[in-house]
Length: 496
Image (cartoon, rainbow, N blue to C red):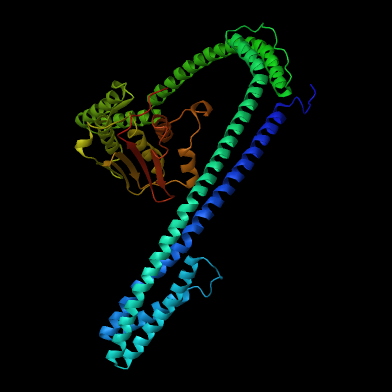
């Protein structure tokens, strides 16, 4: 499609707008020029009147410091008098053009009289300085008489000029009406021109836009088999028409493609839901598997100790030992809950401590520090303390002959329940701590996850938004402290 200047809607609109703008600028310039002339004419009529009135007001104010000086001989009054006298002399016109107008001649006479009035004031000041009372009194009376005459002449000048302004008022009104008439003509002409441009533009765009609207309605109703819109005489609109016709044909083909993709998407979402359900089942099995793990070495060593006790000493102590052992086993298997009260963990730890004291009576100190108020009000993941103590016995005190100690503490700090398991064993290096706090996923691990790793993985699962839920403070040869911080105001994550 060829582009031509004559058929360009943009160019036609630009020319029309530019023409209207030129006419508007010219008319506005004429109105502004006429308004300025009227303002100058009006201002000139009152400017000289305002000036002579200001001189009259200055003369009246001038008398106050003069009279005060003549009465009190105040130096401040004298200073004010000299300043105002200088200001009055400088404000008087130096010269006036020669004129035959009686009003202007009277005004010139008034300025001369004001000069004489100021000279009399200066003479009166000199007489006051010379303490000639009769001299400055006489001069002041002459000044008063002269001032009354000057005021009378100023009033006459104002009256004459007001009469002259009334005579020119009719001409001023005529000029003003003439300007208003021309302004109205310009406004009407510009309005008509703008309306003609608008009608012309609307006529060229209405027909193809109406056709576009009709086709858009048909497309919205799903009718993509409508006949294409014919081209107009304006190439910009023809571009729109061509694009609309092409869009209509493409939408029909894309609708079918969208429907096909939607079916594929629905099938994909159904498959994804099935995978999510399967993943949830696998995660649930992982949790129960982690909770069900128990160190077989502990069972073996415990039973071996029980048999040795039965041989070496009487049946009473062996019976007590086996009773606590059965209590521990029963405690570990009777509760299938994932989240339990803190009391459940403390009770199991007490049974476990008794067994450890029997196994290691000479070189192991065990301490348990907690407040009874925490036992029933706070819930924690099951089996998070006993494996930590077992980890200390198995790893921290390995190949160690000196006396060992384990401290388990439960305390409340604000909304946090802080559980600490500390020992004075061999400790860990930074690499070991880092590997423990960033364990591999269960599906990536090559062996069963036991002890401390078990606890870390379960805590990360129950509290995924809290990376500080567990931390390890340790160094080689200085023991270890495992600190668990649980926010009691947040429920553990139970979504698998």
